[in-house]
Amino acid sequence: MKHIALIFSLICLPGLPLAQDLPDEGQSMMERGVELFLEGLRKEMAPALEDLSELGKKLGPALQEFASEMGPAFADLLETVEDWSVYEAPEILPNGDIIIKRKPDVPVPPPAKIIVDQNPEFDI
Image (cartoon, rainbow, N blue to C red):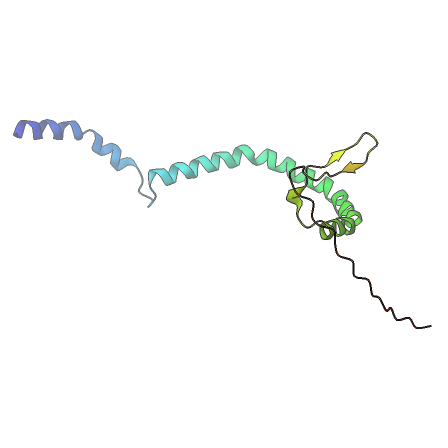
């Protein structure tokens, strides 16, 4: 039994200096690995993010103008349509018209009730 303990201690002895060389920063190996991975990813993505920032600076004024011109029309459309899930994706026709079709399997809602006043009052 003493021979097995001696052999085991001799096998483990060379690994002790390696374990002591690692700095103990309070982080596990997994946390440090994730940190290194994210740092490398950030360095790789930096040029693409700079290009995207420049594109945003160029397109910003055009998008603001589009929003100011089309904003009221979109607001009216959003008020008119109650449930977008019953419509298909928009289609652009060859003449430039845009149509939005109702899905065929969705039932058509009943028409709105019109209330007519039988005795309207007018000031003349």
